[in-house]
Image 1 (cartoon, rainbow, N blue to C red):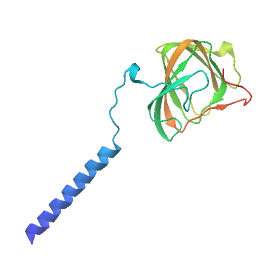
Image 2 (cartoon, rainbow, N blue to C red; image 1 turned 135 degrees about the horizontal axis):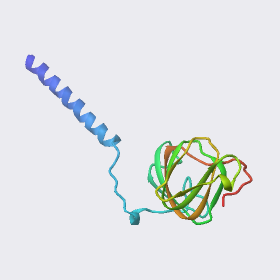
Image 3 (cartoon, rainbow, N blue to C red; image 1 turned 90 degrees about the vertical axis):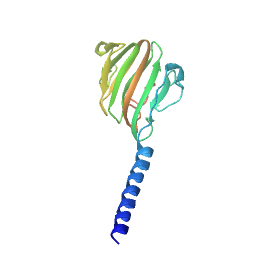
Image 4 (cartoon, rainbow, N blue to C red; image 1 turned 120 degrees about the horizontal axis):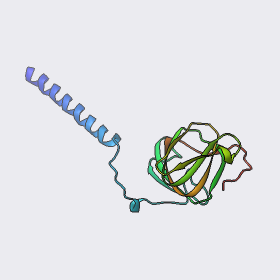
Length: 157
């Protein structure tokens, strides 16, 4: 009898351990290593606008959960004052990007950010951008995300 109790305890422990391993394997993040050539840029995406390209590196900004995307902007591109429902962290990987905060696009308030710069976009804080030269930005946040223009009649670009 003592031996049967010991075996039952052992079997229960093994089952629990195997169950934990299966759960860990299905919920643990996967390993990813991408070169620039392996990134599939698209003209479509949760943050893309006409004239932009986007690649989703992690997650999807249109869905709940963390995401990291890269956006390619052409020189001269502008986005009118707008907000996002999520807070974001932005790194300028190449080019020169300018950002300003407020409900009105004001060139004199633009902060010029060269490659290597970093800035934040707090949730629901109006801001606007201007691209001084072709630029690639990396944006991270917690979805779902989106863009709401302060003045809906303003068109991006």
